[in-house]
Length: 201
Ligand code: ADP
Ligand code: 5GP
Image (cartoon, rainbow, N blue to C red):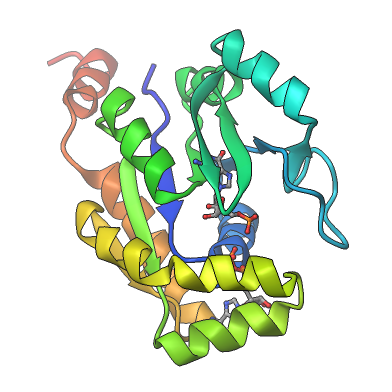
């Protein structure tokens, strides 16, 4: 059976990753990998949907058990991708989408070199600041940390397979969907195996 693909999204805080991800989940068969985090939930965030919100002890227990595909400290909190669910889905032929930071993406690349790495860029730094402030989710301190990381994060865009500018949301979503389709159309031995098995040639 054909395995599912791993799509990895990164980009600076407030660029619109979560917004694009929601649209991709609604409009494609790709499934989201819900991360574990020690960050406190924002208003409206549902446990098990945006994240599994856990204590520091619970997070460390999962680290010790080898339960993460990758994990990292980002903006002062810990985040990790649960290994089992992502691997099971891909084995079952389901595409999996990760929204993770640049450190996590670099670690995933080591264990899943066939992953598709997509960096989301803002149309301008001014607009990025406008969006993250407009979201109203951050304290002054958290805003300072997140905005202070932007230049370093953008410098890692060159390590990714694709860059998508999230200016107009519909256009960004269309571009991501085009990438997903193109990745599925890449030559793979499975195309021939399936075809030759189906027909008596
Ligand atoms: P991230 O997940 O990258 O931190 P979010 O998805 O939470 O970012 O988006 C940050 C803010 O920007 C949200 O208020 C969201 O509604 C807004 N936003 C996202 N994409 C766009 C866009 N293309 N144009 C305008 N606002 C956007
Ligand atoms: P936020 O707190 O805004 O939801 O996320 C902060 C940062 O953590 C974002 O860059 C997001 O992509 C990243 N992140 C979310 N989940 C994970 C994860 O499981 N692993 C890693 N390495 N980063 C994550």
